[in-house]
Image 1 (cartoon, rainbow, N blue to C red):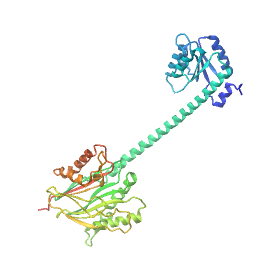
Image 2 (cartoon, rainbow, N blue to C red):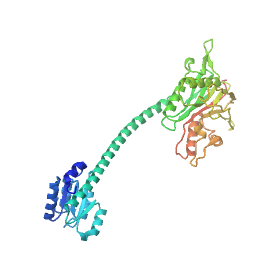
Image 3 (spheres, helix red, strand yellow):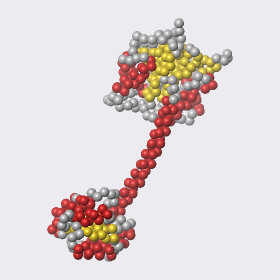
Image 4 (cartoon, rainbow, N blue to C red):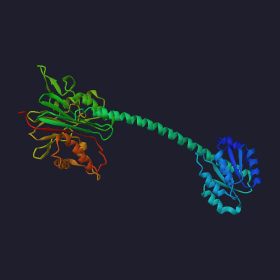
Length: 422
């Protein structure tokens, strides 16, 4: 076993060391080492000092360097340091050749980048053993480089997939925003403003309106459980049930015998949606909703609430009212019933329907805004116009959150009643 040649070691180790550079100012020492290495199957290069060796390394990078420590001009320590600073991905194994009196220099050499050392005169068996150790280290280094390269390629592929997914999500966001085409509408006797902000690319909130008659409109605010794509798909499907002004496409409308259309009571609409979710949709999602029918002439509003935050009434004199029956979210219990209720707006009064992303918005300390905080915030926005108030509310909310972004989707409806036609 002691007579095992480096060529055999080379073959079993996968050929990590093929080219060896011998650096020594003694021609005799170079010839002895070169002859031994050549017999063992290595390609051998020679250099008489560090400067010559460095040039050869630039031209033909070696896998292994055997360098004398003491040489005129650039010595072994300086050459080792310069060798380590050469550009390139290939790692060269570096062995210093020293005498017994140069132990302190050996320490400096190892600290400066040398991998191993050999005492002169060099023993052939010990040299082969040291080369075998170098083979193992270079093989592991090569495997690590290949794995790193594979990881890098995989990360590049993942980045491409991420970029593609990100582009798709950007398009999905545009499509979701298109579900709320008319952000502001003036009806003369009243005006409606809508706002929809997803915490991510897409979200589970939805707000909208639909026309019932010349004097009546329907308003709805929905918050689907969870976040992301599945929640957004759910909102898109729900929009298909409510957004149209056609009786055939809106579950909140029904046709009268004379051919005109009227509305279905909000609590009945929510019950119907609950039945659809339980019977037709195979989903684990549920959602909260507040559905309102607004009489543009009288200011009377019929509503039903299913787990959604209470509607907020901002009276013309600045008073804030927040109340409602609450109720269960839609999609949890089969046959669930929902409570109808009404409010009466006077000229100058406003109805605000906001998602829980508003009242549950946290500040840096973790404390949420809450209903009391919302009341204070709205008091400072009483002079805002209908078209800009929701945007101003989001700015205030961002200041409350110290600009770190919203952890949940933000959506809202603002309706202002101006009074009947004269």
